Each structure stands twice: as C-alpha cells, then as structure tokens.
Image (cartoon, rainbow, N blue to C red; front, side, top):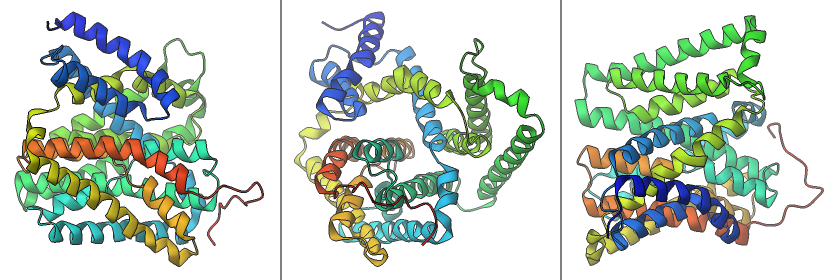
Length: 394
C-alpha cells in the first residue's frame, strides 16, 4: 500500500518532529536519521514511491536554507580574533587537503580528479560547532584551530564548486567573468548594508527584536537569500553559492544578532531542512547498491576521504599539536554533509557522475556525519580546566 500525497506530507511532518528527539538519545546527528527514515519509507518499504511535488519544492527551499545557514555560521569575528598567523595555518591545512585529494584521486583512478578534489575537500561546520561545544573543546587551542579550518574549507570549497560548475557548463571563456561580476555585486551589497547599519542602527535593531510580531529579522534574512539566489541564477551560477554568500554577508554585517540565530535555526532545522534530508532518502537509488562495483567505489570514497583528512591534519604537527590532537582534528574535519550533497547534486546535473557514484556520495555523507563526532569524542584529549582560551595569534 502506497501513501497518497497528503499522507506522505503528514508522515514527513511527524518524522521531522520526532526524529530530533530520537537523535538526542542515540547521540547521532538528526540528518543521518532523517535520511535513514526517508530510505525506510521509500526504497525499502515502498510506502512512498515518489515524493509529491510539494515535498520536493519544500526540500529545495530547505537545501537553500541549509546553504544560507552554512554561510550564516561563518563567524567573521572568530576569524579576526585568530589573527593572520592562525588563518595562515588553517589555510595550510586546507591546501594540504586539496593536494592530498588530487593525489589520491589520481592513484585510485577516478575519471575527474578535480571533481574528486572538491568532493573530498568538503567539511561541515554544522557538525564541527556542536561537537566542539558538547565536548568542551570550543574555546581550546585545538577547538579554535579545527573551527577556523572548517570555516575556511566551507567558504573556499563552495566557491570552487561554483567555478567548476560554470566551467563545465559554459567552458573557458568570457562567461567566467560572471563570477567576479557576481562577487563584485555581493561586495557592493555588503558595503551598502554595513553603511546603512552604521548610519541607521535604530532601524536595524528591529531585525533582532525578540518579540517582533512581524519577524522582520527572518523576513530580511530570507529576502537577502532569495535576492542573491536570483542574481546567481541570472549569471548562470549555482543557486547554492548565492544562498551561501547571502548568509556570509548577513554574518559580516550583523555580528550581534540577538535571538535571530535561534529563530532562523528553529525555523529552518525545525521543518524545511529535515524535509530535504528525508527526501534524499526517499529518492535514494537502492537498486544500484546491488552492484558489487558500486559498493567497491563507495568503499574507495569513504577510505579516500578519511585518508585525505588525516594527511592534511598532519600539518598541525608543525604547530605543536600531539598525535591524539591531530587524529581528533582529522576525524572532526572528515564529514562534508551539506556540501557533499551539493557537490553530488551538481555532479548529477552535469552528468559527471553516474547513479552508482551518486548513491556512494550520499552514503559517504551519512557515514561521515554519523562516525565523525563519535570518533572525535573517543580520540580527543580531555580539556583541562586551566587550559587558556586562545584568541590571539601566537
């Protein structure tokens, strides 16, 4: 018996409410259980044959919100407090990630080494931040180093994905000028918003009011996101970059956002983003996983991803981190989650990857998101009460 569209919507709405409660008990990221739930009611039990159009549209909005919040989480103040020397070290880890990814892509014989680089270089601030907070490592020297590396990796990888997609679609030519033009518009928008917030602070205070019935903060955030997504589309650039940069701009203009953070995260992760991940499970191509070759390629992706992150994390030895700290860093930088899914969707749209590789990337996202926090907790040394909080460059 298959569910109707309305029954599917009710089922997914109920799951979006219940799954985070279960995830908290089993100490797994909710997104992993959301994808598993979609897989269960879709390809496994065949209760849902295909997501209704409404669910797909809500999922697409949820994906854009996921990218927006990824940019929104870029703590510019934290990067500035770290100082140029620590930014240099974080960039060194990211550069090592790119080199290791390219080398391993060639060794394992992947058809498109550049795509593999973008795939394996991804990380997930959305997993890094809560894990550091839960384990008490957020203010430590190790935690700050991991956080800064994740922030840079998120930003630079997504820009690289957008450039790669444009080159694949349009080739090398004048169309590539769309990207610097788009970034110029983003920069001008940033300057205008900063100046407006400086000259008219009382007008912008309403955006962060805790009891604003009009919820102007949420309205402004979504408006900025949709404007940037529309501009990206007009230039033939991936919408996810527009959504991501909208979040970055908002984070750069408004450092102190009051309760807006909680409202936006509650609004997005409370319903729309879970629909996106549940829909991934529903649309997962389970049939291709019956091919032993697909499992072999998936195993190669999982193995390559952890090797890349461990090799890149060895740069931290030069900063005086211990072996346990280096291993912990590699484990926590392992998952890509939202960016992995983004790279997978772009690869599928451009015809770069087949259905088997696409399924393998989704498995990679789920495996890394589930194991990364667990392995970090097991390996990372305990934070001593007297460990100083490092906020300036050494």
